[in-house]
Length: 357
Image 1 (cartoon, rainbow, N blue to C red):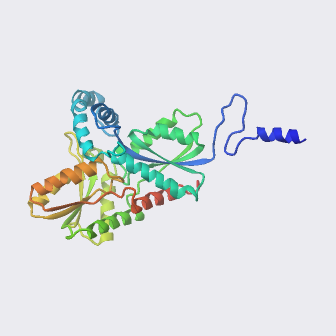
Image 2: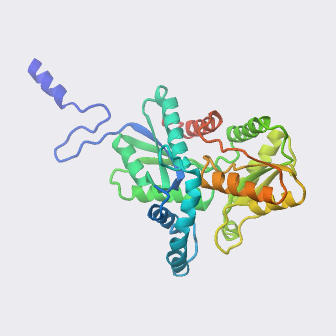
């Protein structure tokens, strides 16, 4: 009898695994995954890593909506022959030399690690990971990794507070493309935009207060600079502009400021199309020419500091302001992996995991 019991115990499947059946591979289940997804990063600053990254980014139909017959000759004939060198030099200015990676990769990894540590004891069945929409680690590879760890339910968190088809939607597109190759697909939830979430708005307002408290003089104007999109995307029904305007309006209410003190601008335009206005660089230039001596700029739409915040704003915009007569330019960092930033991420994840964890 003892021998029979021991034999049965050996045949019993481990917890969280499908019972072994002849010719059926062992499959883990019962875990819940959380996948943080940021925009992307090149693997290096030299020509070929930059070209691979830019090619993946700029061939996305959600990013550039022009017909391929019109866009691809320009992309492969002009853009990808010159842009990698220019972008590579810009990345070199902000590159994390110690880890040999971009700040975006460093910060996103830290956000994932901190969230995993925070959830570890309270939710032992939750597995946290991170990915990039363009570059590495890819969404496909990290979804596969979560599934291999037994995650049959996965919450995908596109790290964009304001929804745009060229950001949130393209992350979701890539997630479901990956699922098309899976026989046993995990259940998927995707985090909706949280541009008006109270915790998020509170964190932005507090980050402004903290930074300004370090300054000898308070800025005359503070700009909330958002990544732009073409006007044509907005006219097709993209809600991005509305989300940006609401975020800044709610910040004004929290800070007790008016529209002249806290303003909305848009940065990072590309190509010949008209983009959302007013443009950040032009606004910074005009403010300086009009005699404004002190300004601060923050980027509420970026969860982590990256090329667009560190090089384009903290670098280029600061130079434009000073060259046109401005005296004090302050860059307010993104929420990043700070206590404020992690509180926002954790609050959103807890809300969206309800019923799963």
